[in-house]
Length: 330
Image (cartoon, rainbow, N blue to C red; front, side, top):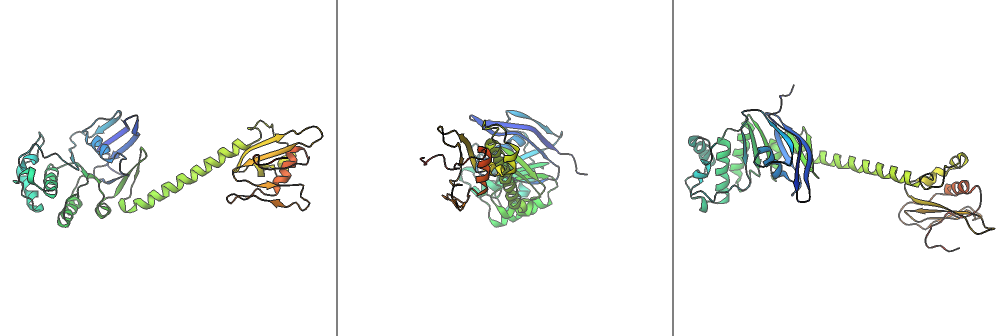
């Protein structure tokens, strides 16, 4: 049985401008989760991480955290401007870790924390931020692009530390190797919704392709069903199709290519005719002695010969044409 979550959100919603960045998101984080947070640029990954950390408030949603849980976030671009030295940044704030713990990690990362903050490089600042975060002994560690500005040796050191780490962590990163080696679960932020799968980043692409393929199949089924209903004679105000019409193949007309069906009453002495307008143009002339189909092909679909019999059923057996509504003159 899995352990209860140390943090959860129910109905999490955040508005951005006139719309919602995400709405009614539910999520949970277990005590030993190793989460990859995935999503396109601008999807709201960093914002979601800040909501989890509690540094910003949502517009809606209930956040529940197990009492005593220490949540620490390594920001992508921490602000060093107010500090003279890197060590001053590490020791700032009410919940700063002990200095000896910070310096012990700094020695392993090879960083001099007594350097002036304003002249420190991006890699040195990143190392200093990592020292502060890891020395804080977090129960939940939130890492936003942790490998930025790090050399290979520092990345490998961080990977080893996280492998031995006993708490939970969530990572946003463009480093695919880093994510593949470390993560066991994936949170996918996509079009305002959040999906979770119990696979690491290594299985993400196959999962993503399967989700998109199923969405495409569902949309196709919905589209076909909608067009089928629109093309029914009852929906078009033509009344119910007689049983003999159904038996003679009228269902051929109600394919996903039919846009509209019209029964047109001609002048006195003329037979009525049925006009079928389709997504792809086709012309069937039942009066052709050979009962041949003369097609005007646009795309791949061709109106089948059985449509002739369907037309006869609708017209009560009279002669006429099934044709394009536009571009034809009697």
